[in-house]
Structure formats: C-alpha cells, structure tokens
Image 1 (cartoon, rainbow, N blue to C red):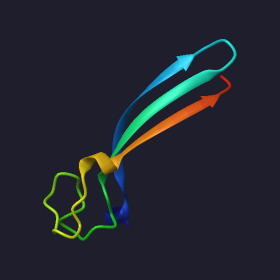
Image 2: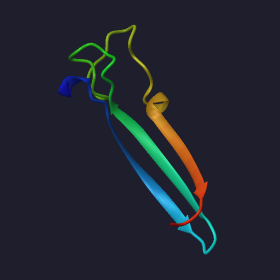
Image 3: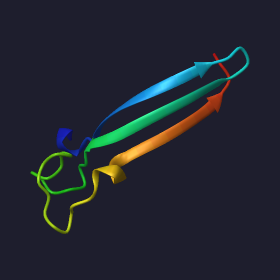
Image 4: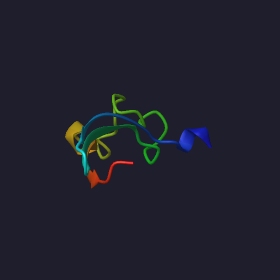
Length: 68
C-alpha cells in the first residue's frame, strides 16, 4: 500500500582509490509509516507520547569495499 511506504533523504561522499573505495552516507528518515496518520511526516506535529528528536532520525553509514 502506498501509505505504508517510508521515505528518506540524504547526502553522501565517495573516496575512490585504485584498490578500494570508502563511502560515507548520511540519511534522514522523513516519513515513518509506523506512526498514526496525520503524524507520519517529520515536520508534522506529534502526540506527546510519539514525539522524538530529529537527531534520532539521522543514520550514518560507512562502506569500505572494492571498486567495480
């Protein structure tokens, strides 16, 4: 169902060396389908028991691997 999809946005950087690459990604969850309708988007007002800080919605990823 379309209403059950989560959305996010982010930015990343890739350092490509001859023998491996390093990738940094910072993502932000902008829609949480587990919340009640009307409170699912990041900037919508939340019920007092459902309010979370925006900092807890960030996710930092580090990837190290071979170039392909």
